[in-house]
Length: 262
Image (cartoon, rainbow, N blue to C red; front, side, top):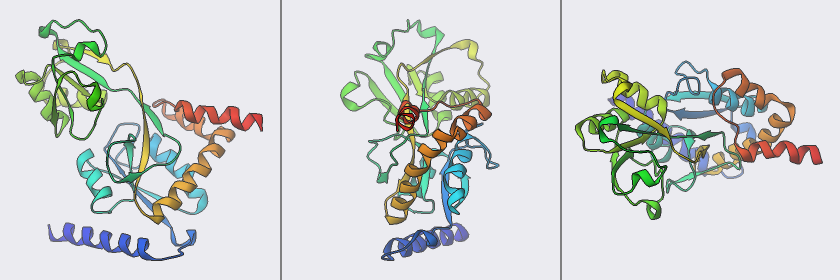
């Protein structure tokens, strides 16, 4: 516990020092610390995965080493926004209310899954299915803005907790990433034969989101500069092809047409 506190305090001191130094140059930035939950093929714990590869392609040509780490979502978010142990978190959406700043380009499109028990006898009609029901998603996810919620929302802290609530009848439907749902069901020893799974109708662009500060502003400018280069060279498409997961966001695909027209 003492070692963890020391690391947090050290991270705070380093970030405070970096943010307070006026006129720093890119030569001061040798490493970017990035955190995300462990998502298979996207952010593997061993440092492999689509997102880690994209970040290396962005930063390492500029002499900035990417240091990836994995942690559960809520803890990872706090490590970026409150404790400043990491420079950025991967997989955040815009307008979450968190003290984060974003690059111009998203890194992926996320389609969340909706799971509900077969015994409920629901007929899937898109978002209309949620009306009047008790719906659960991870705390802080903000899947749908408050103005669009015609249902009762219960936020859970872990997907495992959400699955437990679904089994206990405390939730009618659960919304989360499919990989997380599948893992939670497996760990609970529950088969998919008892559930129906549907995709949310609209995908959400997700980003690499950075802690506020001048260091992040430089890292974002480098990200914005490099993504069009990776699109034009075909390197970005090659990374998506390599991992066979994820989806290049429409705003990023549009870069190719812009580059070709120049």
